[in-house]
Length: 65
Image (cartoon, rainbow, N blue to C red; front, side, top):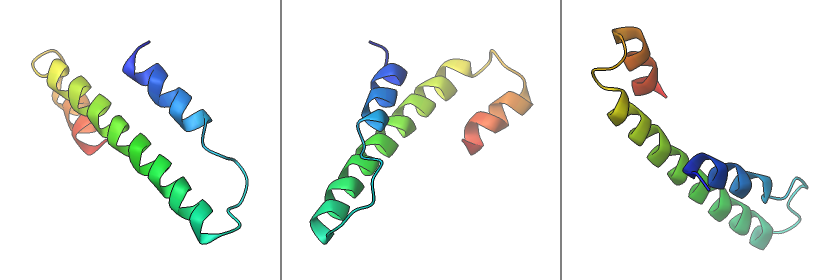
């Protein structure tokens, strides 16, 4: 499974319902934090592999992402 597929699976596993307690919110934030960290890792790897292969606009777009 690729990193992106694993990230999508992690995002799909997050509950779609409203949190009803502080404990629910803490658990949801932990899951979101994990997914955000994974997404940052994926973007970093894409950015690193794209250097020298894409033009300045794509490079800037990856930097902003």
